[in-house]
Length: 297
Image 1 (cartoon, rainbow, N blue to C red):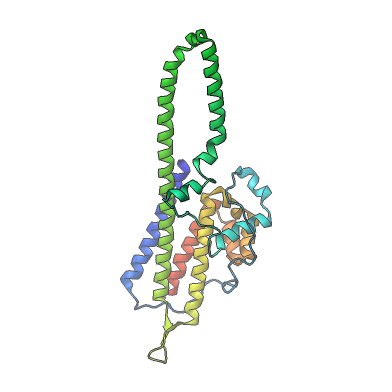
Image 2: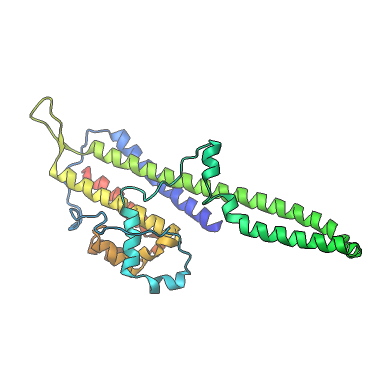
């Protein structure tokens, strides 16, 4: 639960920064368009940042590894598989399967159902209960020694029911809150992208019925911002979930450079800075704000 509250505080602070920047853009309006500016040399601006490999991953991306061994087991294939999952344009399978309430469809389902997950343990308990019943039936005097267990069973049953109900409810609430935070973060990034694209300077079309296009300087700026947004999302989720933690290692940072998600200069700044590895996404967020504000000058 402590990691959940830390995640919530981090995301809330980042949301406040985004709201301030969007409010600044909304107040100033389109009078000051995004014009040419000289950002730090971004040699990889036009590099191919999407998945450059044909992904064949079939794993569920649910690793449970101690942090002490993440650095030693991080290989290029492992990091590339994680990046393929981060950069894919569509899901490998439906994230949430559509529920069909028809009884015919329900009875056809087996994998993933409660019966499929519990039939083995349920069968063992039924056999054990039948054995105890037959022994007590053959030897009724034995049951007198277990009279006190009836009261103990009732108390344990109440505690177990309360514990399961409480923690299942809390687990669902925590999962739902984390999902809402991720959706909120995604929505604010989308708002930021729309605001930057709407304020970017365009060329006036020669044809009255034609459409305008971005100027070369504006297009370069938007490409840099899109790369920063993608890098922010990857580093942000890598700091919150252990399955993507290998991306924060030195090998993972070098692989981000090779895949065109950051430049070597940016990688050096993030690696040699005094901020924690799990807070590097905050630096990228500042780069986004600085790039957007400098582009308006």
